[in-house]
Image 1 (cartoon, rainbow, N blue to C red):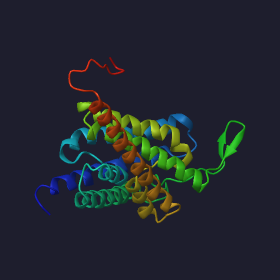
Image 2: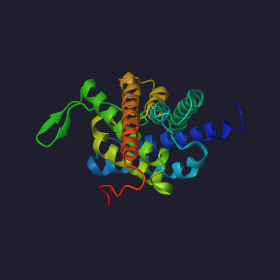
Image 3: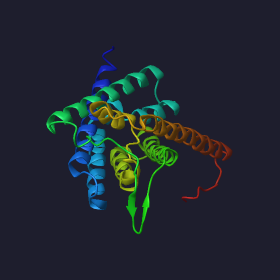
Image 4: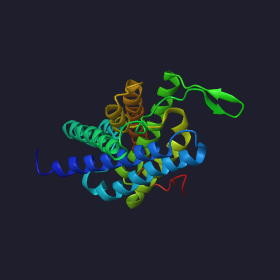
Length: 248
């Protein structure tokens, strides 16, 4: 391991450890059946943790703290495969360590340690809702798409400057407010697998691992496509042209 990659891997480990410990911890403490206020509390616990650690470690590793984000950045051509593998390993180890430490603090796994699960007989007004694996896959993939789109458009493209962690943290928060009651809104393989390993409950693990990665890859494809369209448009405007952009 080179001196250049070591700080990045450590940053990803610490950030993911904190994300799972605080985010899954909030889900464990708040529990189920508390309605929107409880979901909002869980959402902000996740979002604020990502935001502060992205501010802390963004300049070191980029502050991914999510294998799906790393896959998206890799697919967009913004990092190498070897580095991406190291990131994902550090994130997964950090997620498991965070969940195991949480189980020690909470005295066991009775709370479920915030393990994400598809909703069954969720009360919605006068009806109930059960999320099928297909619907759950679509939700987790879409939430992953939203997150990686924001990461690529802010932190990677540099459009938001120093405010990129704020945009990323708020995206995470909004995603969980919408999807928390439906799938647990993990859209992060490390966030899902950490509690699963600690509790031994691997229900729908394939979904929580693959769906956000699929969403991330689609986000990278869209990001690359939009960038090419912008380049082609700018190339079509000859030097000295008086053509104006829509923003003007």
